[in-house]
Image 1: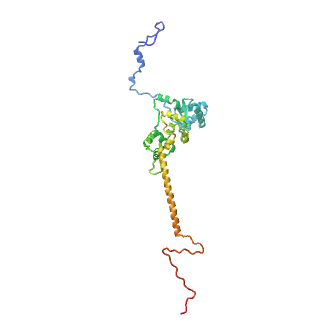
Image 2: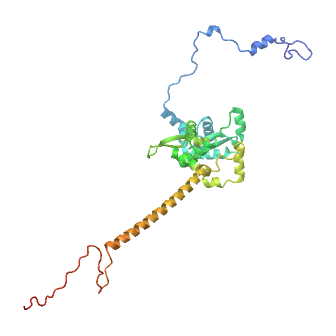
Image 3: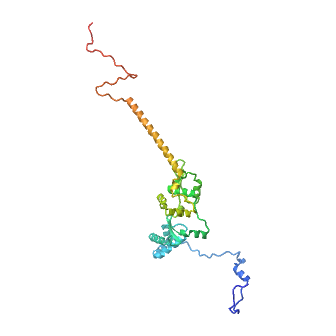
Length: 341
């Protein structure tokens, strides 16, 4: 079997004959190791430079950075963000490039205008207090297929618990369970393992329960700049039907795990418990008011017995026929102390 034609068009041989299958196989298969080199140590081929002085190296880098044009600064920033595994703050970019923070901020804002959804497959986001390059959302399905990874979706219980912690932090596990109405221990443990929440400390209360809050990974996961970027309850309520359909489509046809954060923060069981407590509170207030009225009446009666009102001028005080009354002695004639016999 031959491959190709090593002669000319008229069949006249003008060079070496065709390669045999054995020769082609020998070229295709990598050569075996050299037995003579098995006992030989490999030489060091990397140049081992001395440890540079970081302070002087940074000064030189900053001096060169001042001479960069705007386009060069943009290319430097884009390159650093491309190789960075986590969001980079202005301070981190300054330490890496030596470019002034004002120039970095201006460059990032211009770069964000160019690398945005709908215009570029790479999008520049400001997340978790830093800047990060991410793939465009419309390309997510293709990227996942290329990387052979499954989309990360949270269960309804995880979304509800995470929403409560995000909006109520710092919050304890009993407080979360009081809102959801079910045990949340397993869900909280899973969120801790995913590093979406963390332990903030202990509450100064009976039993010193643990306080939970969100993490930097939580901000990265939901592409949030900070906690202030969380949508408000009003924004959830004002979701249009179109937005709700988009949420249902992205969640695989399911209804949204929570209709806004209201469903997570004020579920039906919690509302019923609030109504029952309100009724009990009103009943207790009624009993308390009645008890206070009875106490006022008793105090008034006691005051009337202990301190009767004074009689009007010119009237004799009423005779007290009660027990312990002392009868006045009979009057004596003092005009004639002695009478004649």
